[in-house]
Length: 208
Image 1 (spheres, rainbow, N blue to C red):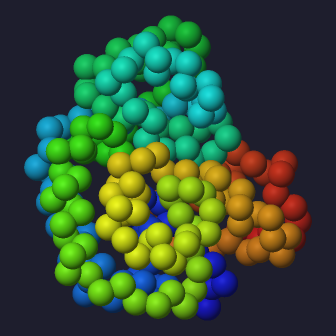
Image 2 (tube, rainbow, N blue to C red; image 1 turned 180 degrees about the horizontal axis):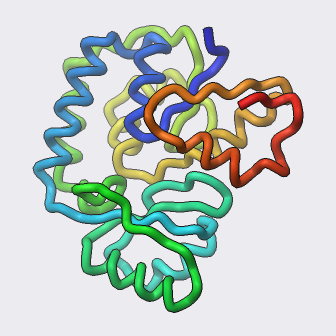
Image 3 (cartoon, one colour; image 1 turned 120 degrees about the vertical axis):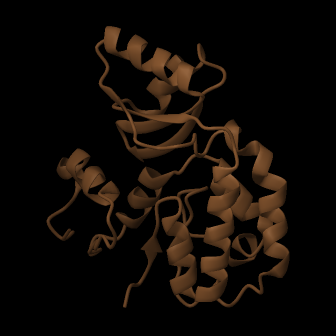
């Protein structure tokens, strides 16, 4: 039984469901409709970049159509937007000696290319009866523990879909507990990637 949970983007719905905020049926309905709305948006691309949030911001100023999508660790971010701009940024970063990789995605998630679905997505929550939260979880929006009042609103989940995923901040928040034991559940390696980038900061009390 976890003391706290953190999810990565869609994974936050799992945390919310396990916490008691959503029923399983509500979570599945939201996820299915969320995916359908995302799929109806124009296609785009995402680029993983081995730079910090502040460093990548200096590059993005030259690509106004691109957005910071995720901050996975102190030196690993993902940029999202239209494919021509993503390809151009990848080429520019390569020439600058910065490692990056275009991800295998159909759309530019967590970017302005999702704006066209936000009103329809918000309307889905009019049918949601938010429950009590028995187990706390970390917000991708703030990188801190969720506030039960805020997370029980449609506006929170719209921000959670649109804003950058602050996964790194959330894990740093959990690491303030010196006895924490992380267990990654699911097909991804986001937690493992974070640990690899922060081994010198993770104490011997933290078991991965």
